[in-house]
Length: 169
Image 1 (spheres, helix red, strand yellow):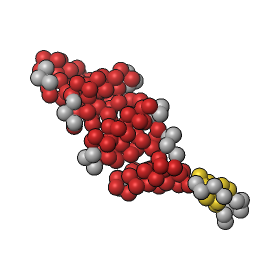
Image 2 (image 1 turned 60 degrees about the vertical axis):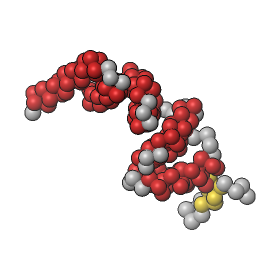
Image 3 (image 1 turned 135 degrees about the vertical axis):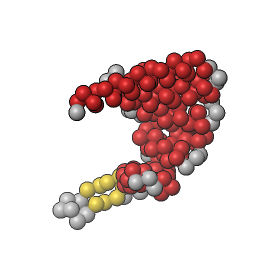
Image 4 (image 1 turned 120 degrees about the horizontal axis):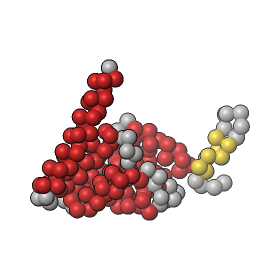
């Protein structure tokens, strides 16, 4: 018997199910209901058994961030990137937020800029959000003119969204 496998019975068919997947699934569910401490436990177990899944590092990084453990979150986001996490935009935006919380506005700006470049042009809400984050980084660095210009671009996008909704209704 393989220690990380569990036999599933009572389903009419005996099936072998990797135990790390059970921890992954439960950790993901705990994350979804914002039970971050419980999610950390299960995601940590899943990673200890199978360290290859980038999604587990991303989710654990998100939990760590929400619990204020920014240094650890940054490590997990970097590992998620190394392991090929698919949603690069989400990864860059999340890691940018952690960089900013750690006081590294230049790295945060780089990640937010890269995330912005990956966004679909039609995702105006996402673009406004990322533009705002970039502006905060510029303000942190006392680059007020560029921050102002970024916020003006963001406000134009907000106006477009509002006008589109008004015309639609």
